[in-house]
Length: 86
Image (cartoon, rainbow, N blue to C red; front, top):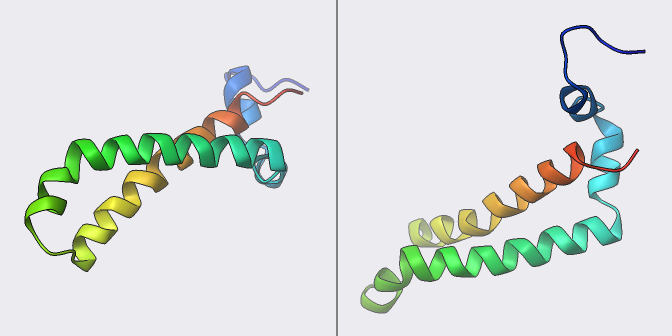
C-alpha cells in the first residue's frame, strides 16, 4: 500500500525495528564499523592531532574523539537502513 505524499525513501526509513535488525546483521555491521574506524581516524588526525601532541589527554578530548567515530557510524547505519534491499 502506497502512502500519499511520501516518497519511497521516506516510507522505507520508517519501518523501525526491521531497520535496526538489518543494521545489526553481520555484513552491514562490519561494513559500518570499518567505515567508522577509517573516517574516525581521519577526523581525529585532522581535528585533534595538534591537541593530542601538545596537551595531556582529558575526558573532554576523549569525548570529542569518540564522537569522531560515532558520527560516521550513525551516518553509514542510517544510509544502510534507507537504502537496504527489499
